Image (cartoon, rainbow, N blue to C red; front, side, top):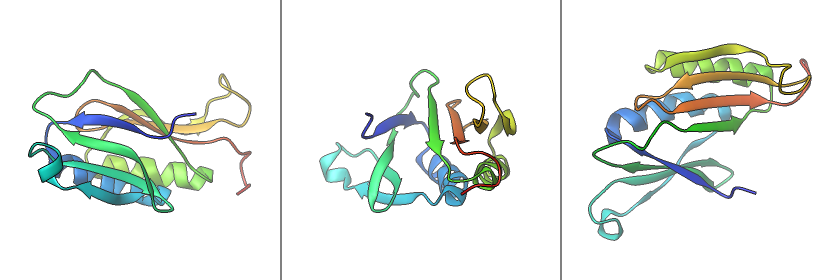
Length: 131
């Protein structure tokens, strides 16, 4: 049902570097930056896959309250790679990669806190060994 979502970030370059690294294993990249002439001089950019931005960053002096966003992964290996890349890019661990059977039998996820404290998750809903 959700077409796209966005968060506020306090340091555009730091957040852009973080999301470039964390989303790379998931096949998501910065697809669009809105010209500042249309945003009142603030930086706005959208990450996504297959040409459609669906996760937007907006530069702000103060971040919004911590949020949780789960990004789909096609395999357990992608979840693992997301977590490793995010940690290497400066994220704080908020739940190492692993099964979360409390959600459903095939739920495999990893959680990190981004530079502004948002809880970002990569999740695969497929059984181990499938793609």
